[in-house]
Image 1 (tube, helix red, strand yellow):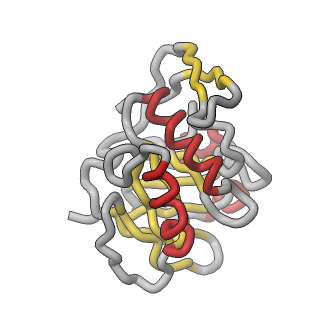
Image 2: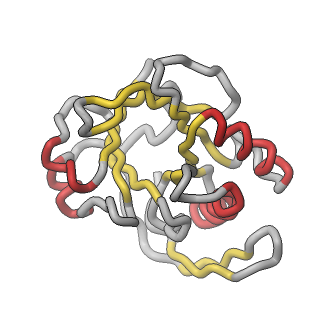
Length: 188
């Protein structure tokens, strides 16, 4: 079974149609969505947030790995942080070229696609790449308002994301760098 996901900028929230199983929008950056309005507009849908800065593995479920957003190195740190914070794999979004660079780099850091993180792949041509870790593909843009994706993995966010009690966690990057303190904000 496949599911439909629409993703969009915060400015387009009021113009996004009903009918998708999953909705995703930006959790930070200049295109961030108003999270209260997001919840009001789609109260029964699965709502996910996209991190474009690499600073919100505690509350965003998807890392945007594109030019102007997360770098490969930042994405690897995000993957590690997300898994420590939530005890499950996060998701990275990017093009085939980006994933061709990220997957081996992440593997070299001990992070395996499909085990330590999922891939939401931008193809924009409807093709299904059948790569390890791919949970779905973004296949088209609709009316310049939102992107349409087909999600293949029924286990990827099978129900609404809910809030849990906050827990402080410290994470150290693979290169021994900065300690990050964050809070667990979602559970299955």
